[in-house]
Image 1 (cartoon, rainbow, N blue to C red):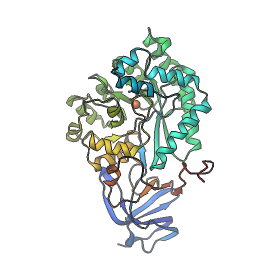
Image 2 (image 1 turned 30 degrees about the vertical axis):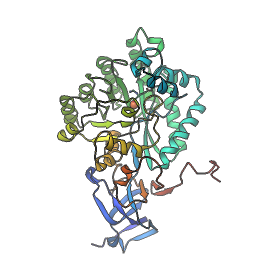
Image 3 (image 1 turned 60 degrees about the vertical axis):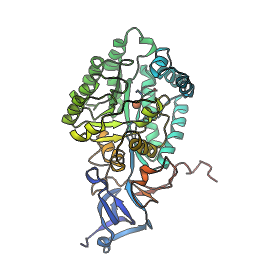
Image 4 (image 1 turned 90 degrees about the vertical axis):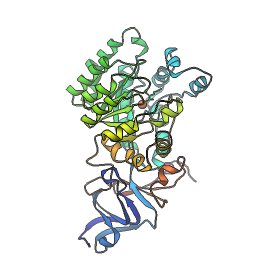
Length: 417
Ligand code: NIG
Ligand code: FE
């Protein structure tokens, strides 16, 4: 049915994978109309024949998906941990390395020693790799500062990166990531600092969009995290949680009690946990990169998530310790091969469900009228190709806020020749 359309740009000549309701919902030979950076219409190209459009762009084949969303990363950090990778392969466990003062705390030392400029520059180099394969929205956590000033500095760096790069960045305060060395014998003292000093300053400065914590025997108990979450709630900040990654815990129940936007990792989530997450609409964020690098064998309960209708997101968890991963498409592949997700579930996991994990489902994650015009054109004949290729060698064209985005890897100043 021909439609009356008045738009800034009309994009056509590809199959449109809308991801409406978390399904491919593919429109063959589709078209997308954009006005003021938002999608105003999506449908069959032939129905847009009479559209008034200032610009018409022909993709000339292939498919278009929503912009990819990486909803769980720790991309700002100093140093790297390749040494621990080697130690693990020589027989030490993640927990043993952490107990010896390595692990997260070794990145804390390197992050505290780095200047804000150095942190921003190293993060920028990582981020552009994600952008080159179609990421348009990104979450980044603090959590490697673990003192008041260093946590604030990390969040300021994250905000500054969002100003400099053509990507939307959701900033998360993860001050309850590990017990800081100064509080080794008094973890409750650090929880006190987070609640009484840090979160009020973060709120006042508008430095974070959500609050996260690591609920695990080698980090914080459900009781300690509960205090942080209660305080976050007082400040009107939504919460998310690293839960049930390495062992069974009360993490999922806690996340559900605080109506967390997401519960992340979840390898050890029980059927009851899944039921509680479902009841609160909490998204399960699955992180196959960490599962793979730590050579874990306990998989997240995918079938239970399906049965109870828990939306599953997928993310890179990009971090120096457990997931030095700079390819979200590789995570699509791993979500399928390691966790048994279908390619359609995996794609929903980096689009609609990832948007929901960030509280952005009204405006992001699918190609529907009213949503932000972030989309990616891929030289593929079917969407399963996104999960099929092992990693980031697919060229793509990214439309960001309704305009073709220059690939920042090869953009001005990068010396691409
Ligand atoms: O998501 N689980 C805790 N946090 C990170 C790991 C951080 C690190 O080892 O530096 C994760 O896997
Ligand atoms: Fe993480």
